[in-house]
Image (cartoon, rainbow, N blue to C red; front, side, top):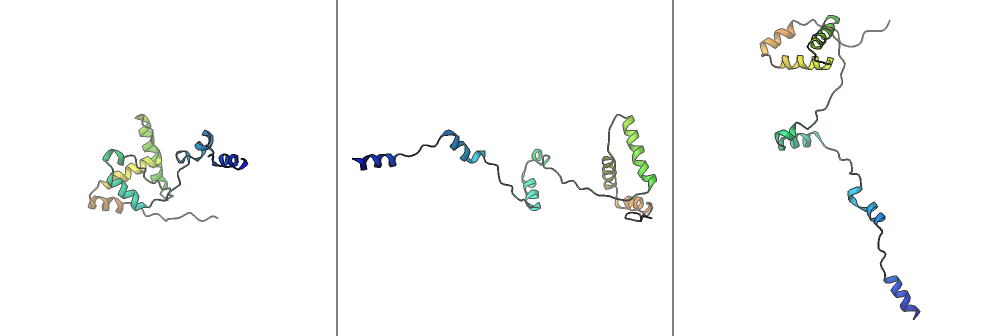
Length: 128
């Protein structure tokens, strides 16, 4: 008789509690980080409708550059003009707007504008 009791006890399956089931559920696990290449991002953007394309973030690049002081002050003047019009702009926005305007010029006009620029030594000045 003792063998029958032990057989019935071992035959019972352990029912998992709600807490242990919640811990093991795959929906609650954090998704693994995946590496995406630039090609997949571009191909994904091509396949999306126009509304979805606007949601894709463009990578932002930090850079430093050298320019004459009088041209640098021109940025502050443009910012002041914008503030009088109740439009707050940053230096980077002023520069990006300038690039947009330059991008709209014809080749001959762009060549003339760039030819009129003063040549500046690149890099940082030497310390004394």
